[in-house]
Image (cartoon, rainbow, N blue to C red; front, side, top):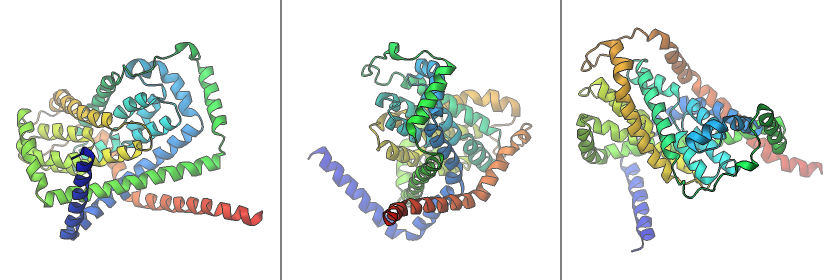
Length: 413
């Protein structure tokens, strides 16, 4: 049989199995769907939308080109990507996944990146935002904001290592750079490029803002669909005992790294959905706090198949391949877990002096200075739904207005 035919049969059986599982477990699937919708409604949409809108405006006003001209001497030698990659990296770090993929795809469509540069860039610019690491994971699950320092530094140091590693990606296939045609780096030249980019875009501010809102909400609606889908999918795998079967294989891997086998289920769940995996890891009483943090760090870096599916959907609109991103997530997982091991003693254990086997998390001396993170997270969860509803209504109004515009012009004419 041809591989494509086998793939067709496999995908058909998978879809049939998923449909059958939904009919067998309708209540459980509905509860999982609500859980995914709640996460998107309260946290994902309100936390990502402002960054998506601002990113679109910065691209339209030429600010990204300006930043790219200034950061070219930094990004090109270290990561073999243009200076605009620095903007994508910063926005991806601040807003979280899949913002890096969205911005990389947008810059590729604008011809500001080659396909090879885009594959390198997207591999290390998708990361969890600090609010999620400190608020949801450290405070929400482990009830200790200071653990967020270890998780965040391990996560971002791991990302840097991935970027340095991916600089060697497809080097032999890359076209040599023609430095002679590049303008000399200066603030004046960067400002001139900013002005040229804004004039080239040509859209008035009102249209630019409307396009930014419309594009951002469309992307977030797609993300919401994936969050709900994988929440249901993960729950069905658990009900069908497939997760338990897979956990036997992961038990061997965990034993090799001298980690308890009880963390295999949280690890598998986290590979599908980050939030559930982090929560399950924090509730594994047979593991020490150190072991829980190492596994959680891997889960955060791998980012879960849910996020990876979102990235794959975004990259499908371009010629950027998904495979390098997937392998980069595996490398990021091991890098982040390794950094968590290295940073544990100097950043947490030495400050605590507590027994690692004590599962009761103590109050930290420096926790008061991080209490604002918990406040921000609680505020986001409280007012997130109202924010989401407001911008969904705004999106509907913009779409309705633009749909009616051609009709109005025809009547007036």
